[in-house]
Length: 89
Image (cartoon, rainbow, N blue to C red):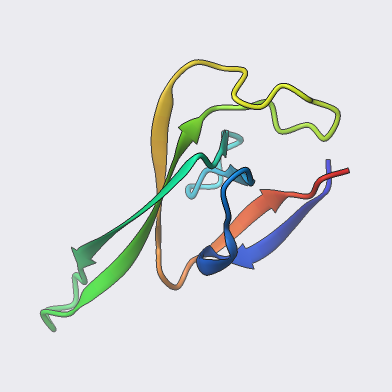
C-alpha cells in the first residue's frame, strides 16, 4: 500500500485516511465537518478542527470495497496536523 502525508486541508471526499493517533485504523472520508477546541496553554485561543466522517475500511491498495466494515464515526485532526492517506493504484 502506498501512502502520502498531506495537510488536513487537502483531504477530500473519497480519500482513505489513517487514524490521527497513528493506529492502523483507516476510514473512507464521506463527510467533512469543522469545529474548535481551546488550546491548553492559558491563552484563551482555539484550534480549528477538521472532522472526517466515514466507515472503517481495509486500506490495502488492492481492496476495492470502500466502506467494507460497519461503524460510521469520525477522525478529528487539528488545523496544523498532517494526515496520512492512501494513494490510489
